[in-house]
Image (cartoon, rainbow, N blue to C red; front, side):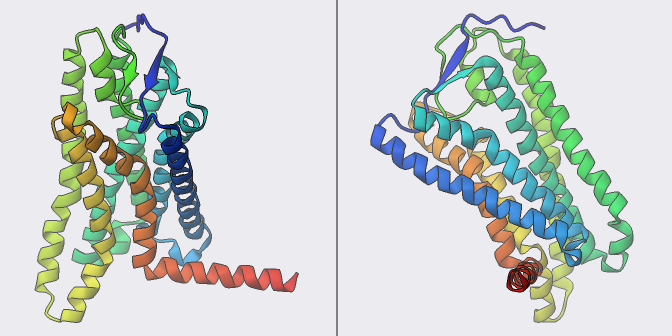
Length: 313
């Protein structure tokens, strides 16, 4: 398969054409991106360096923090560059590379949320067998499958994307490249690509959706059987952060990819795309850090250790 193109680059329309608005958006999204990187790096290194956090739940949370940093870094730096330089031009190879990494990290997060659902299911429904069923070998295998499955699905899309030629308008009505945008500006029949999207993308997404929400049927059933109100609240608190993150993640994706696109929905679609690609990676660490006593305690221990080191110096 060969990508015979009649244009060499695309134009990313972005979020605004007004210079003052673009300057304001640059400052706003730069702060969002820096906060995303800092908070996720903090969680990642806290889990890596604190022995008390070396358990399956925090192992998956460290993977989520790394994914959020990577997921945001696919789109944010390019958008910030376009806002400050006013160029908005992206080459076709760079656009295809952006699609690959965006789909890979988004798919990895989708599968990782499924693995985290299974972890919460074992912790609540089979607590006595938790250490046996969620050993480090099992966790490592699950994390590896997450990355392999997501990269395979993304590579399948890219493989068939390379057969397309682009000879229509070179304008992409968003701030980054994504499959639906490229399908709209190609002059090649996209039937095969849509089949791949339906079979590979739809199959993997539906499977991940089921694997994420099905364990909660058994989790809620187990929680309802607990007699004490304190016990119910304690059991629910162990998975409340994950439920919040999953709801935000799937809610934004459903609106972006499932709601029919039209001229009246372009701006609203951009808003949800910004939320999914840029805001959500910042919300995830905040949700987990605010609701997880283990992370807060680890942060305080690190703070006191650092303070002690600085005092002794």
